[in-house]
Image (cartoon, rainbow, N blue to C red):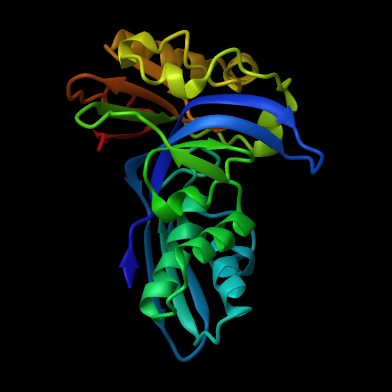
Amino acid sequence: MLVFPNAKINIGLNIVEKRPDGFHNIESCFYPVGWKDALEITTAPAFSVEFDGITIPGDQSDNICVRAYELIAEEYPLPAVKIHLLKAIPIGAGLGGGSADAAFAIKALNDLLQLEISFEKQLSYARRLGSDCAFFILNQPAYCFGKGDQFERIDIELAGKWIVLVNPGIHISTVQAYAGVVPKMSASDLREVLRLPVSEWNGKVKNDFEATLFEKYPLLEEIKAELYKQGAVYASMSGSGSTIFGIFDQEKDLVEVFERYKVWQGALR
């Protein structure tokens, strides 16, 4: 079975408080975008994993797709499979690529092996694998809160807009990103602000990581400024990573403008 885990962007990201368990409660809109990995899972004589594309750090046996298989195997008698992941979504980029891989692995194993795991059970598995994994089970725009693992439908319409994502190859770990942030309750309801036209979001829809990470990595702020210069109606950092995105009213080709970096561009759906 071949599936294509897609990335997401954060439209707004408020870090509201630190939790007793060491995590942080956030408020954000998660929105799917078309930058994708390719994940193939097939039954096999023996369990194996294979990675291509972007180098994935760490031990293969601890990869999040492997952990998804092992988690399900605790409750279901799974046959051996071969997992082949072609990694294209940048790592440490604020795009949720690893979480998407895990969620799509859960869904692919369920379909391939006809396990009939309920939607709620799939969400439960995903939440155990990562804070934003559960989002990718439904994979639709959502207002996310808690650790990023709780969500509800959000009234936001971006279909037909054009998005350009620029990743300069800076790897920012979640621990590093949170180190410079002071949590605070947001002054306004993000859900209400996102009902405004996109052209009115600048200055109102913010990512709390930008203040400290732009100071440490000025290049990120320069990319954001360039996206606005190129006509973006809104631009922001995504998540806690190094990807900056710009939303445009019309199609734009900015590959040459950002030729030194990884760029994905396409229509929002």
